[in-house]
Amino acid sequence: MHTLPPELLLMIFKFACFINNISDTRTTIRISHVSRAWRRLCLASPALWSNISYHSPLGYHRNYVALQKVMTYIGRSGNSPLHLDLELYAREDEGFQIICEHSVRWKSLSLKCAQGLMPTISWRLRKAPVPILEYLYVQDVPTGRNQEEDSSGPSPLSQGKGPFSIFSGGSPKLRVLELKNGAVYYMRPVHLETLSTIHFSSAFNDLELTSSDDYEVMRIFATVSCPLVEVLMLQNISGTSWFDPPSDIYEREPEVLWNLDILQLEGSCDISLALHRLLAQICRPLKEIVFDTGLSESPSITSILLPREDGNPPTRPTIFFPELHSMVLQSVDKTDAQSLLILLPGFADQGRPIEKVALGLEIASVWLESGHGDWLREMRVEIYVEDDRDPKAPLWTRPRRTLIWRDGDQSTDSG
Image (cartoon, rainbow, N blue to C red; front, side, top):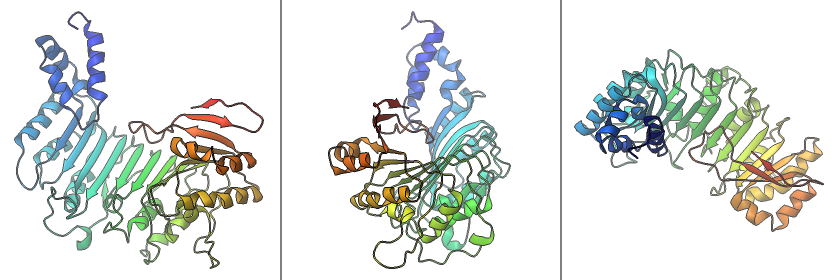
């Protein structure tokens, strides 16, 4: 290793430092402690120090080691763009204050915090200049759900606080926005004109914000413009149609996402009546719909595309996506599988047949040996098998697909 040229050695260091999850930033420190030569090379390479993981102390106790680490990494990273992984549970945290002073260098920000800290954190983010920020992930931990959080006091929502807007000066490079749990309500950027991917999710079936989750999703689309969005992902957003929507929901017609290609549903997505109307409006240009809902008991395909089949008047009309041509079934439950028997012939009868169906690896191994495979062939749809998604891959990319059946043709690979 000592005979390698510095350029090649630096490439190896970068691979070692960045191949791991961003939350593990100890590799750079370890490499710099191997030898004097390696240390000189590390200190002369600011990009090696650009991944910063910081977990604030619990309660009100200061963590001097973590604070010193933040200051060391920021100092050694020079002017390199920063990739941040933050967990905040203490009020007036010094480490977060220091990090905010360098917001002009933020390239990606993953933020997890106690729900009660949302007003304080959003206040700091509201005025933060983020000219190069491309990725934002925000998750709040509802009060009392995590024994390690600072759970003193009521949640901001119970006090009538929020929603909170952030980055009031704009975020001109932001491409991917992920809001999880109450962050859908509490925190969102003001300007979303550059977004290509949006992901809304909830981790808890009994989330205390359930009564407003999907309405906040609606409010986002009714109050801001997202003209470049290509991928919309909904995860565990469900079941609030029995609540009266806030009065301001219908004050403005939601804008159509003219560049939308993919709608992806994950987990429990029994789409409520309110969200159903929203999706019918904003998703008209949709080309592909992805179902990854196999572990859920909610009938996702039925709730978004089909009316009720129990003889009663449908609570949701069938959504008409005039440009829809592909379906991806990463995982679906038995109810959704049966719904396809109604859905695909129905599309064909309406003159808009589905052209392609991609199956996840697990579901493909079962379906292709059963009557489902024969039925898909009878429908004359192209059948693909899709690889499992790389969790480190960007959200807007789809896994490699292999064409395994086409009417009168041979199979090929499709990236």
